[in-house]
Length: 436
Ligand code: GDP
Ligand code: MG
Image (cartoon, rainbow, N blue to C red; front, side):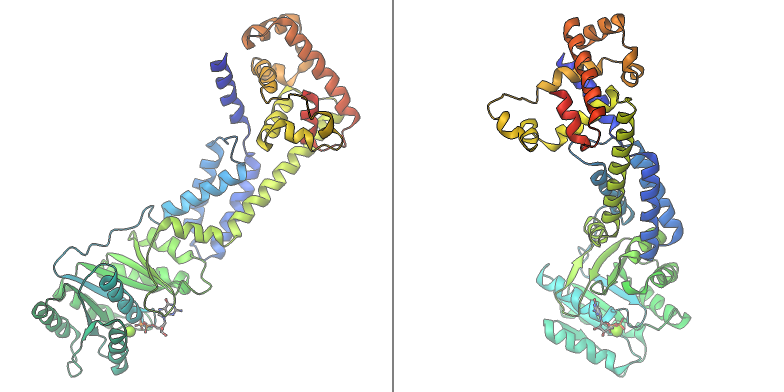
């Protein structure tokens, strides 16, 4: 019997699904939230289609509310969209050469400082920073200041107007000084520009970097994605660094970039302090995006609506005396989800004291569930159809005596009448009282 029950439970659990209509609405809202967060339309659509597919197919486990499940599906998909697990950042080469590129103001120079600090303090490396931005004298000063703050040497040649030869000289210098990581900062422009691209491409060719990191300001939204594409076409970079995540950014860029250029985000950086560089974890970013409230609260709202709709439908059925075994089973599940039966009964005014010494075990439900599980869907929906021969079959299937089934049928009928009379009461409670 216990095996049969288990089987029945499996089926039952499958019935507690979020409705299709509900999913469709929620998904539409999620799509809107993504678009608001600067996620590209095509990606948002593909994403929500996937969520919809999963949510529709997935069965809701007793312990998890449909809303929570939906949030989990969304979170998993977000994580997947951003690469699933964190990307490798390989610093095993001796020396490891890292080229840093991106638009002006994206945060390259600041990132170089943060990365050098990270590799020095967290990875025990001995880095050399290379001032490859030759167009503004202030750029060299900026890197010098950063280097001093973190105690990392900066290589610069103020008279040299050729970034490629500076990079080459820096590599020679690093070898002499036994530096095992070389971070080359480069010049950016305000927009994608051929001269800049060519210069960086030439440095790449000369320095043969192990990592080419593209730095992008996460506050620039869709532009960030276009820029990433342009740089990737030219440089075939190995990873992305998202900066300025401390602002009011909504993560749209993070979602879209990985998908568009098929390159992982490796670091995120927020704030101007040099110790705030973080390895990028897709799961955490997904949480961050969800944590912004939008999606989670959308899903919660949908869940409330769903419960309300369901309650209304049920109330209507009760009024018309159409409450059936399927509804009954759903009510039982609801109650079980709420916790211990006796505690729930105890919350009803006046009941608590009365049942203080009565032994109400949750097992009391089991017999009832076994009987309903043995009914066909048709029988569950049409209690009046259950005649003597059907009762016999149900009793056998449930491992019960015929008189037990008869008694339950009688109780059920009484309960229906009673419920009809008091259909103003909250739904969850009714099923429970009926069961008693
Ligand atoms: P570059 O032109 O690409 O080298 O960009 P910089 O590193 O000079 O940064 C441009 C401006 O952005 C500077 O004022 C930085 O202090 C600031 N900045 C860089 N990274 C971040 C960050 O992660 N958060 C914030 N709030 N500001 C940043
Ligand atoms: Mg700079």
